[in-house]
Length: 367
Picture (tube, rainbow, N blue to C red):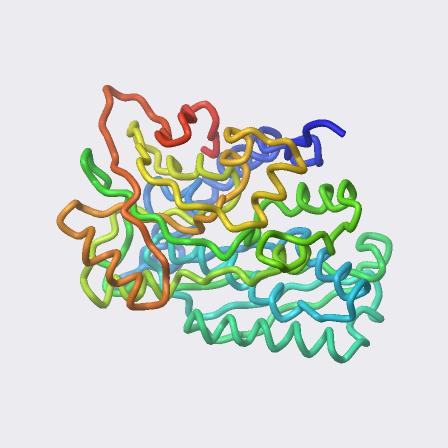
């Protein structure tokens, strides 16, 4: 059938990123309005994963996010097998919000759910409704945040009957201010990678398109004995407890990256001319083997689109590497000292040495 890229499946990052940059420029005009409340906008915050407001004794952080099309996989598996994976996708919804939030050092305080359905019948199924509610609550508990409310809408004619749109927002706090992750990354700093649970919340549009190419669709078997659809629906890992543990252990994090959208190119999200040189690449989960083979992706396309087994990254000083990895392990995360940051005459890039890949600054235009 030929190669199927993320763009072929309907997602064009260059178009989306251009709109995001336009929104950043327009939004910046409103920054002075914070002065009415005695607050100020943190410098250079636009384009980061979370929006930061400086108050007298702390920073407030805000994130708005959405799950994307992963819930369509849960809908399909429910029809095919009778098994509910709605608890997992609700966890995914919270994870994509709070993982962005904690990348600046903010710990989530309050999370809100947004849901839109094509018809109210979608929520008339008690199992589906209860699993969605239970999963959202469980994820908030894992993140250490209250589920403060939300909004549920029926958008007939906009949302297809038989499915839903999930999203939400969160407010977080950085206190004391010294816990803020500021982007203080230097030549020689270590790159610590934390494992994902699999696809997590990125690339599902392509993953769904691939199901149509497989004779057994979402029921296609993987090397680990599970089905393709089941693996796609593994709940995403929530990384805010790791960030909180590092703060508790006084391990300074120079920068943190939630690895969703743009794949490993996100390692250079920081607006600084540095090279992120990766010397160790963890083995991706079996679901990625099927995705890469079926879509006929080369390594550049795969690592430029998917997390390929890595869900979060932090940069630390060399002296803090062992403590950081140990902190991750002690709190239930798998982590690797996988590379280092290099100052290379103003060049900005991600170099994945074991794969012979390089992504230049022009491949990530989010500001």
